[in-house]
Image 1 (cartoon, rainbow, N blue to C red):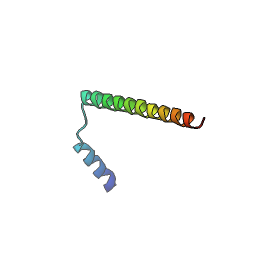
Image 2: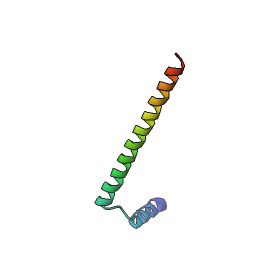
Image 3: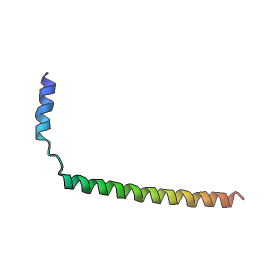
Image 4: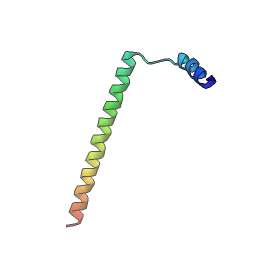
Length: 56
């Protein structure tokens, strides 16, 4: 029971982000994910075209 009590005490000390902070952080994560998906997808396509060209 001491562990559960200490967990509740620690959770009271947590500073939770505001709604606007959550929206901002979520937007940053989505934009970053899209950027890397496009970048890595483009790099994969370029390498695929290069390998296809070289194997002919």
